Length: 146
Image 1 (tube, helix red, strand yellow):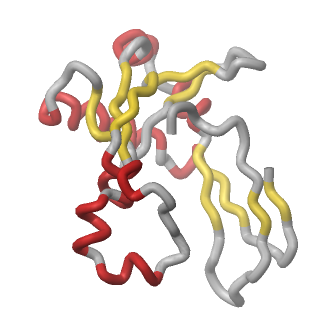
Image 2 (cartoon, helix red, strand yellow; image 1 turned 90 degrees about the vertical axis):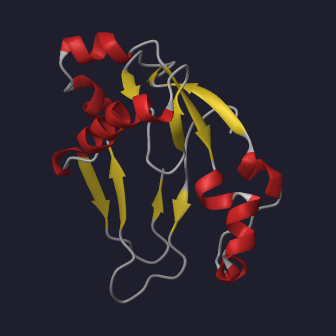
């Protein structure tokens, strides 16, 4: 995506008897609990994002089961494209800062090699996914989440 979505709306249409919960992370809390030195180190860095790990043409060619999933990719080539986003984003309304990283789409830090990026990104992934930064939704039929 050229820009992250402003909001997400989810609705539970069919709810399984067991499982099916959705987890969320507070990337604001993840940012706010970093040391001032780490904040100064990463603010201003950009991350190269791509869906190549999950939606690329190579992935689809190698994974025969992909066509049976609920995920449909309208533009197969979009999975191969790279987009650059800031590692730290600021909410336009509140001015609150948050991390903008995830293990699926982040490929590397712009201007760094994969080997240089990996330890820093791995630290941020582990920090951001701490249990105390999470929220879990146990869905009920027709429940809406914004």
